[in-house]
Length: 229
Length: 242
Image (cartoon, rainbow over all chains, first blue to last red):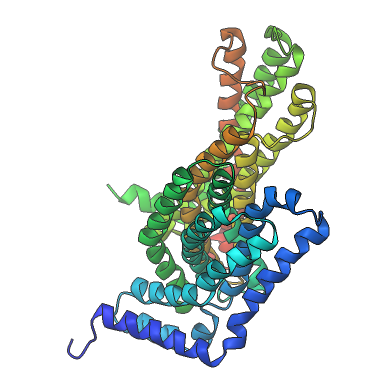
């Protein structure tokens, strides 16, 4: 084969293309973020406005809201590419599909996961989260949302051709994401108790690397099933 | 070496074999479950601490064990179906899921009933109960994904990927939940099933596990026959048999 781009170049092109496309429809990118803020507002309304009480659950609330917001954004991850035939072309390029999909997931994470991470201290502070826990909250969310993007990518690839796929996607991905939630909110809780959060953070990092290594294989298998038939 | 494998995997052969196998699994299962029930409820001594309440163990522990065993069987069958493209393996995975989900539900229900006299509440966020609950969610997700496809072949392959991803996650979920509860709960909660269990209590437990295994074999062969009938409803061998 002549004239074929290297894997890195192809993945880079996919990454840049998705960022460009998202930039042109930035209001869609902003929606999960608004959802994130709205959901965190619900908790004080439903429980108590007392900051001292909210503080004890603030880490968990931020984590749950981030989980739901990034799930909301995941539904459309592959849909338009499968519908307009772009995905079929990718399957047939001869490039390793896993890398292309990983690039797509990476750009998706930059657009949805990263803004969630950046906004989390503000949202957390509104719930009484102390300044000392900011770093841990952001680091845990950084690892957690990245892992969730890969896990959700598998789910999105499986449900891309399905009617009412969004509810199904949540049903498939949420149980798999529960360990992230446990470790993430636990890390924040440990810092607030004045202890070292390194244990849960290292476990989060381990799960991240596991999903990074095995995730693309599962994603490309799922996309092939969705596209071929 | 592979000829027997392909012969077994052919739907007509499997259909006949499973039909012949079913009674050899079903009757011993019934016998063993009845024997273990009598042994566990009547013959085994009462627990010095929990009295007679512990006897629900004979349903709870084997069904919890089966719920995990069947998930692994399902994932292995799904992997076999995905790698060697054997439809019968996919059918076996599909037929296993509802049985596994039922055992998971049974384990949760009996655990909850057991929790009432032991812990004083119907539900505690105990590590085993919680990971069992998440396992139920995994089963439900698998069945939901499978039922959302119209094309059975796509349903087979998509749900197979999910089952494999799930089985990698099961240990992670289990240990994360265990770790989560050990940090949250005070150690005062009574540990129920410690290995320091009387041998007279243990024998019926093993009989019950074997009985449940045979029951699973029986239910699987019945359900698998149903799956084969549904998938091969237009095949010529079936119209000839009927």
